[in-house]
Amino acid sequence: MNRHREARRDRGFTLVEALVALGLFAVGMAALMPLAVTNVRANANASVRSHALALAQEEIERFRATPFSDLPAVGATGTPAVLDAVYTRQWSVVAVPTPLTGDADDLRRIRVVVGWNLPNSTGDVTLITAKTRY
Image (cartoon, rainbow, N blue to C red; front, side):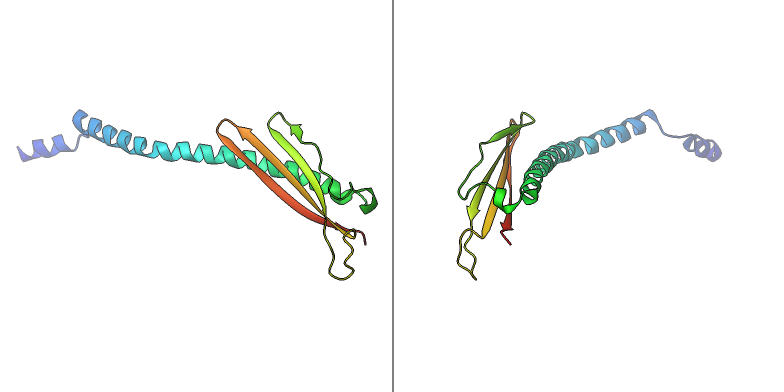
């Protein structure tokens, strides 16, 4: 008789055991769903910020390639440009007095701001560079 009971136990899982295991698995997965949603949102925000940073870097590189004499006048501000129907990019040029000469026109600071306003994400990225006459 003991052999018959031991053989019966070695056959596998009962339907009740399988349903309990499946229920525990479902509860565990449901607990992880908020984490997955947060991860998807963070990836979307990182993608938007990364694209905005690339657009700002593109404008900074354009100013770096421009000769000092061709830079916009001190105090100039560019009109906001709409890019990809999502981002706005604006730049401004500011004079910076140099400590050695005191001449405010030898060094200029260029500031580029790229902003976005999406239904679930709003923000901006600012990059600043300097360009000297010499």
